[in-house]
Image 1 (cartoon, rainbow, N blue to C red):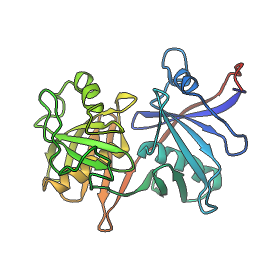
Image 2: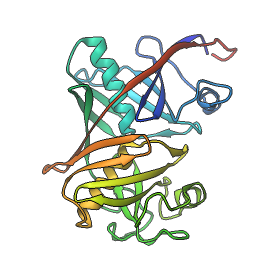
Image 3: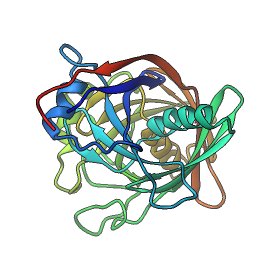
Length: 276
């Protein structure tokens, strides 16, 4: 790989290395992604984001998302907000459109924060997807103290578990088992969620291919949708993650809008290696 400038960003501590390949194509191997994401010997990140030319001229970029384990995934809400902020600053505008493997996203400035329309919440078992026909409001997976999940897709698959205290479950032990439950053929992002007020949730998350992260935008969206479906909250909630709060609105049109902060940590250049 030839030398490449990068931007390190985060949304509530959910951190990303962003590479711009719109003018100069970039193909990364899984090993290269893992090396860059390594927190001891690389830059360190939860996800590596590559910006590519969009297929549709209405969008500013296609956002390719690699997890820290090298695998490519469909969606990442916090990364979408961070990339949107980069592109809005670059173009001097207050709104942008992004393409992702999960579909198009629209983002806009919301004061100092960024709001992104994550698209419709997908609630049918085939759309999540699950391996067999299942009531997605009561999914029969569990491990240890966790059971009776709600399955939601917000461009990627989630298993949301409601508990009395989100601080209690040992996610480091439970997460890897639940991520690989055979009911989720594409693996699951796992959220443990407790109700902390009429429209307030506390959430901790195990992200597939990453592990425990300080925040997960699509996970917060999935938790908000799951709570509303269970009748625990209304459709507008605040979800407090390890890294801080996100505002979620499961709109009447079925789309989920997420609003929260973004930040640039630092910029740098990836050193040239012998790879193409």
